[in-house]
Amino acid sequence: RITVATKYTAIARDFFADLADSLSIWDATKLKSSLFKLQSLSLKLAQDLHDWNLEASLGMSPVLVTPDSGRPYYQLDFSFSIGVAWKDIPEIKTSLAYEKGSFSQ
Image (cartoon, rainbow, N blue to C red; front, side, top):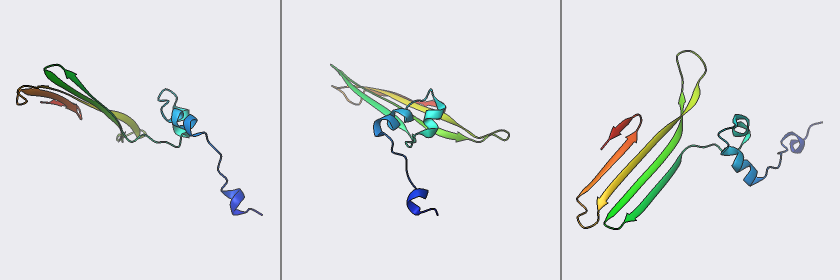
């Protein structure tokens, strides 16, 4: 006789070990066994450069690619941006961004 408790018993996992496995991009088996699934990752940086302000951001997210033939696979989609502004006259600024395979200003 199978009871509900024996049918749905969960294996206890260490939270930090499972989180580390989810970041193991070099080991596909650990990524598949982890309960954490990456949807996006972003990093932002702002630096005061005396007379200038520098801002930068970097992001990535997995995108499912389904080719006409073969198996679907995930590919990382990267984006970044860099901006510089003069503190004394904030209207004097420039920025550069890369997203979805193209640059914009």
